[in-house]
Length: 131
Image 1 (cartoon, helix red, strand yellow):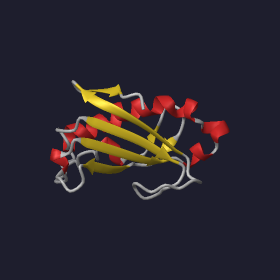
Image 2: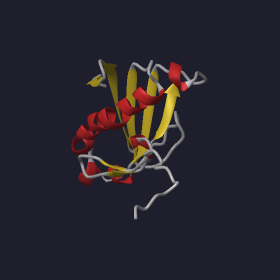
Image 3: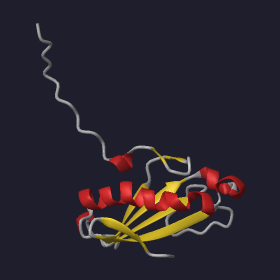
């Protein structure tokens, strides 16, 4: 006899809402996502910011920029483009940031290591801006 269930499968959560292992080996929690200009609906946003917290980058000997540099293009291609496709189809720019501690957007903190990279969204791909 077949097992019949009335439950329907739940759709998978969007990729950017789940933890990810970056190419460098960093385990990153889901990012904070900010749409810009602020105050407009996500669907009208021109920029999408993905803000990751990575305590390990505070140890520059273990996780300096040279070790995590390739993580930025990976995160743009896997998370940034997914966000653009699903929530912000007008976005032209994806900015990926990593900080050694969580801080408020726009805040400076001399004791917090922060790395940033920006990518143009061109034909469904991330093109590095070269910040």
